[in-house]
Image 1 (cartoon, rainbow over the protein chains, first blue to last red):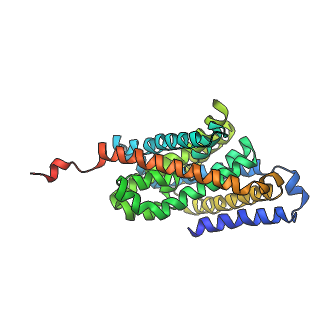
Image 2 (cartoon, rainbow over the protein chains, first blue to last red; image 1 turned 135 degrees about the vertical axis):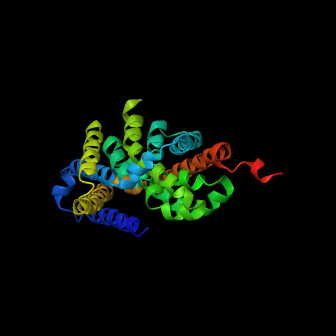
Image 3 (tube, chains in turn cyan, orange; image 1 turned 180 degrees about the horizontal axis):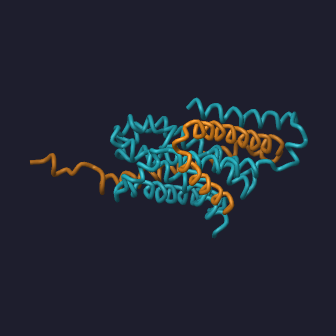
Length: 201
Length: 96
């Protein structure tokens, strides 16, 4: 939670400085974000490769654990399709790409900004921050109403870190590994699915 | 964007190779955070200097809320189905 607040304050600082035009021209006219994104993805990869848990979770491979990330992808696809029917003036692939951020707001908003521009990037940032916040607040309710994998599915990619503590409280410690595995799979899927949805169709 | 995915896979391979060098891994972790801070800051700057977005912020926020609610509700409903099918303790275990 503290980590998210720091990230959001960097974002807010950027917005405020941008609004005040208190920014060196070189930052506005050069696209550094491209290179920063390459750096970030390389570092995220190192983090996944070096984490013994990510490999252990894969070693505990079995049918059930594999189903959970699929549940989240299918559920998110259906839910976003429902939203598309409500909002007729949006592009389906655009909002599906936002949904496929699965709460991983830093990466998905950066990706979507690169692919579709800042406007959809902002929607992606806000929607995915909200997914994390909703999960933090509602995980215990989801566990009671919809069963023990519901908080994990709600958390999306964040089920491996920021929402993992609340999930293991709501669903029980025996679901912590499931939650971790689910988060890792979705984290890896985010760049693939977002790119596929925005470029591939 | 394929470049980005190739770069990430290269990172995973390197991360696996250096997984026992704790200092390098910690350094990569810390750099990851700073790369995220930098990118979000740059995104903030891009938004703050974009008048069209600033004017439409409430509408964009509403759209974002609907998308996140849709994603969460769809996910927990499918999770409920999957839990009943494959995860929940069998009722018959408790009966009889």
